[in-house]
Image (cartoon, rainbow, N blue to C red; front, side):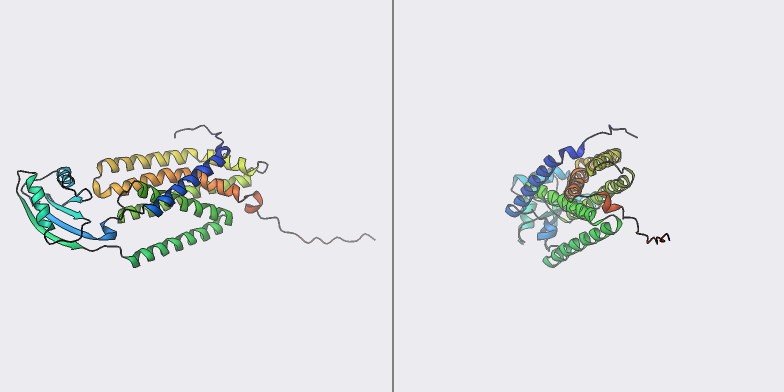
Length: 308
């Protein structure tokens, strides 16, 4: 196991961390309000064109040909064989679009290219489903708060839910600022970020609860610093190994899972940061104390006999 120095004063930088988090949230919310999310075809619908080459073709060559003609947002992927190409575009459906795409591809290669189909693709996520998904997310956060309030204490549940909201807002803000396509795979990654961040926060909170019961002299800020240092090895090793896999997926996984990998990569970084600074910082703001976790001893009625 990798060993780290165990006397970092994490909470000493809590005010700077709070200001930094607030700044990132404001930037993210501002971008979401002004730019919005660049929804993919799963949300908006569009056109689908399938072509077949005589020989296997590189997907990047097909994308380059389409970009040169103004179709920079086209999603290109293989469909079965390596020479069967599926192209999804956000364009309004046009009966002649397939022939236009076919002409572009034929002009960029000496191989034979055949048009297989040209059709409209409806959005997989309608307005009703979006509303239901948002409602489901709120219900899930409420259940998380209830669970943590039962397992730990109400202040811990507030801290965990606010840390989760912090992570999701920053992930969405990242996609809004850089205008990366937001599709169903990215939505799945955003939900996975919630699970990852919550697990990380619960590990830290569990150690904080134990130390409040063990370290009976230290102040809350010292208890939090001790707990964060004790869980630092686990947090760093878990985050680094997860990020290593996600970097490989983003680089070599192809276009279809690129957004998924980026969303999870950003989420892991933000989730690791929030489990150290946001979740603990909120506990201090709520003035968590040992009395919140250790119930007072029961009062026993002692009968005192009068001495005659």
